[in-house]
Amino acid sequence: MSQDAEHQESAHTSLDPTGQQYDLVIRGERVLTSSGIRPREVGVRGGVIVAMQPLGNNLDGEEVIELAEDETLIPGLVDTHVHVNEPGRTEWEGFASATRAAAAGGVTTIVDMPLNSIPPTVSVEALEVKRRAAHGQTHVDVGFWGGAVPGNTADLRPLHDAGVFGFKSFLLHSGVDEFPPLDPDELEKDMRELATFDSVMIVHAEDSRAIDRAPQPDGDDYAKFLASRPRGAENLAIAEVIERARWTDARAHILHLSSSDALAMLRTAKNDGLKITVETCPHYLTLVSEEIPLGATAFKCCPPIREAGNRELLWQGLEDGTIDFIVSDHSPSTLDLKDLENGDFGVAWGGVASLQLGLSLIWTEARQRGLSLEQVVAWMSERPAQFAGLAGKGRIAPGYDADFSIFAADDAYVVDVKKLHHKNPITPYQGKALAGVVRRTWLHGEVIDFENPRGRLLRRGMTDA
Image 1 (tube, rainbow, N blue to C red):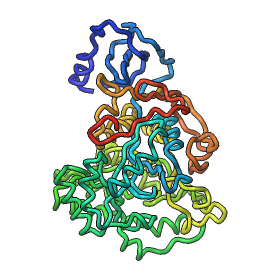
Image 2: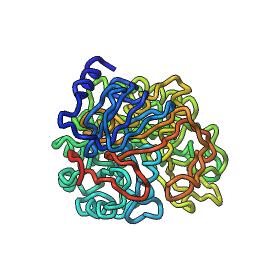
Image 3: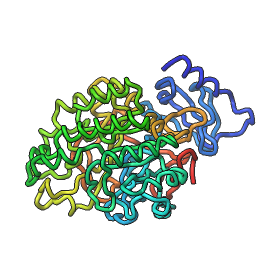
Image 4: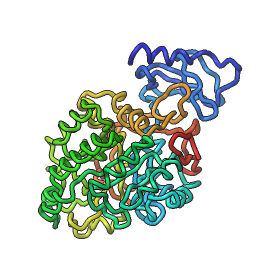
């Protein structure tokens, strides 16, 4: 990190002038700070980091945690792409189960997608229904996206004022009838509206015309399903979003990038100064289509997992900054909707359950590529927090929320779906050996015990409700 970052940290590290004891002190040789992994002591009071000092200064706390030699203190991850589905489809996933899974994986903040719950979050009234459903159930902090659907342009500003972090839209059928897609002209109209109050349009970018002309998926052969969701569908839709962003000067975000073909035009758009950001997901970075077994519908998602060569190019896009960050797109369903009995990719619900596993998945792959833990955490914590405007999240630094995890980077485990907190026991990673274990997670300076939900409901620009 820069000398400026080091100075910023040290400028806040004087002894507490009141002489008061800290609520919590965590100290060890490996603390991920603004200037990299350093030997530090972290002092917490009132749920906020108030001191960071060199190891050996012996800060006094009501509770003192000493990191083991193999442990690193990292900031809590921020996952801005999670489908919780409550209310309405709580049997798919609920706030209690989803936020336990998040905490177990070192994720301390999620932002919930506006669809798959009933009602979808497309009006202030629906947002309040969602917030009431979440109240008192969350083990991590939870924010909400709004939805942009045909006919709700007038609802966008009220939803923004009510605290949503931005607006999601689809350019093809979303999978649920109550959240219809926008056509490109409707997308542009809503983007012009969002530009007036500097909100962001986050887009599921696949072109419905290209998919309508592609082969129809059926049966247990993943190759047939992959052919039904061609890269061209993604590329066309992303090009559409880029041009509408150019015409409107609005902020736009590409969700779950799967097609590496699109990287060149996204890179150009960024170089042109357009307000475009891009995410991808662990399943696109760790899985490859060539290895998906017959009938293994746990792997089905849209856009799809593509070939090994495509995966390599996505990693290059991350490393050169074209892709901004990594989020889960945790999109679970009940087991029957995955059509496990028949293994038909044309019938099964599309969505990967991975909220609890993301950090280990990405770290396992990244370390083999010579990438650092600092880089991984930046992609999964600091950058998504910055994207969503979550001030106080994503870093271990004075003034930030005391949200962090103890991560044992050299420890390992084998994924056992029965030990995951997700509501439905299915994941494509069953039996996979992963590096890196989250040993404990703190939210606002209190360890998450999975019994007492202490998470807050977040509003854009505010710390809590």
